[in-house]
Length: 360
Ligand SMILES: Nc1nc2c(ncn2[C@@H]2O[C@H](COP(=O)(O)OP(=O)(O)O)[C@@H](O)[C@H]2O)c(=O)[nH]1
Ligand SMILES: [Mg+2]
Image 1: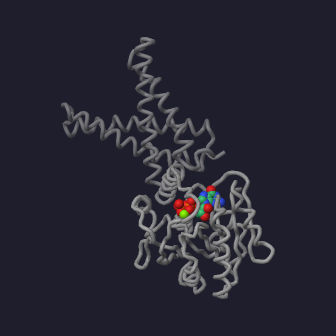
Image 2 (image 1 turned 180 degrees about the horizontal axis):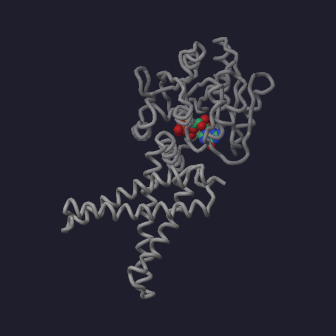
Image 3 (image 1 turned 120 degrees about the vertical axis):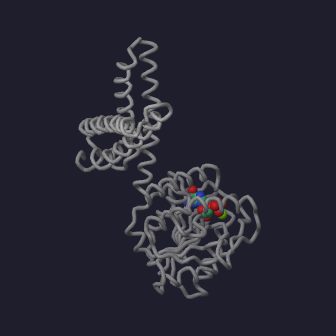
C-alpha cells in the first residue's frame, strides 16, 4: 500500500482539486493507497474541506494545532502512514500527480529506497519561467552540494520506503524534508524528472523565515556529515570570541583597577577559559550538556594550561633553533604556537574533557 502525505496550510482553493486528482490517479493506475492530509489548523478552513472526503474515500485528515511547520507536518504524516511506501506531494498542484507511478515503481521493484522529483535532470524543468524562484532554488541546491549529490535537494516531491523512515531520528527543523532524509538515512536514491508548475491559487509560504530555517538546517546537516571538521570550526569560533573576553577583562582590570598587566592576565585567562568552557559545553560538542559541570571544567582548565605551555614551548623552539627572534618572525613563531595549542586544546577537549569520562 502507498501512503500519500499531503501537507497543507491555507490551501482552501487547491485542496479539493488535488485530493480529487490523487483519487482519480489511484483508481486509474489501480494503486492501493491512502491519502493523509496533515493540516496545520489553517485559518481558511482547508481541513474542513478535506474532511468532506473521509467517509467515501481512503482519505484521513490530521489537524496539528500548534507549532506550525512543513517538516513537522510531513513527519507526522510518516508516523500516521500505514503503507510500505510514503509519498509526499505539495497540495498546490505544483507537482505532476501523473508522475506518481514513476515515483513509486523503482522503490517497489527494489531498484532504490527513495525517489525525488527533480527539475534539474534531463526531462525536468519549470513550466512557467520565474527567474527569481529559479535563482533561489539553484542557490539553495548549490549550498547543499557538500552533503548531497541530489540535483534538486529542495524539491518537495518524494517517495520513500517506510522502514527507512522508521529507523531514523528526523529533525523537524528544516523546510523541506528531502535533504534531511537523504543525508541522515543514506537511502539509495533515484531522481525522477518532473515539470514543476507555479501555483495558480493561494500564496507560497516560502517566506524569509523559511529561508533562514533552510540555512540553519544546512548548518546542522553539514555538522552531522562532517562532525570533526565542524566541531573544530565551532571550537575556533568560540576560541576567537574568547580572545575578546580575555582582552576586555585585561583592559578593564588594568585601566579601572590599576592591576599590573601580568597579574591582570591571570584573571583574563580564567575569564576566557570559563567562557570557552561554557560555550563549548553548550554548543561545540553535541554531548557537552551531559558532562558533569565541575569535573569537566577542571579538566578543561588543565587542558588549556597544557595548551598554553605548548604555545610557549613551540615559540621557544622556533626562536632558539630557527632563529625566529627578530620582528616580524617572532610573531609568526607565536602564531605557530597558537595553532599548535589550538589543535592540542581541541583534541584534548574532544577526546578527554567532552568524552564519556565525565558524563553525569
Ligand atoms: N502542514 C503544513 N503545510 C505547509 C506549511 N507550509 C507549507 N505547507 C504546504 O507545503 C506545500 C508547499 O508549500 P508552498 O507554500 O507551496 O512552498 P513553495 O512551493 O516552496 O513555495 C503546500 O502544500 C503547502 O500548503 C506548514 O507550515 N504546515
Ligand atoms: Mg508551492
